Image (cartoon, rainbow, N blue to C red):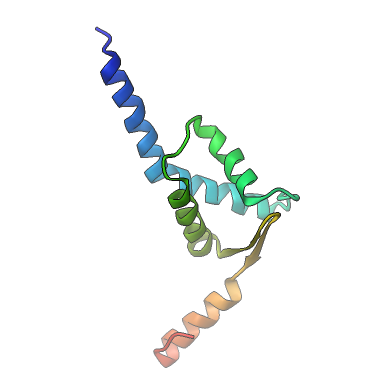
Length: 111
């Protein structure tokens, strides 16, 4: 038998799971791939975020956390850093990443 209260709880649980576990990695991939294929255009971070998030067909309770997590994934996984949000501009941080690893390994220090 259909239970509307349980149905609503089910939808909220799924939306929460997407927000906490799937949204940031997917949006980071979306932005990194857009950068790699040179299709960022003149859109803002907010526009790219909303376009990527549309696939989930839900709104997030804590968009700021999703964006913060997405930025961290961009740095750690894709070695990209946002330098401007409107229009969205990224820079590759490979060089800095490798130099910092070198210093940490050979001099046991961070730069």
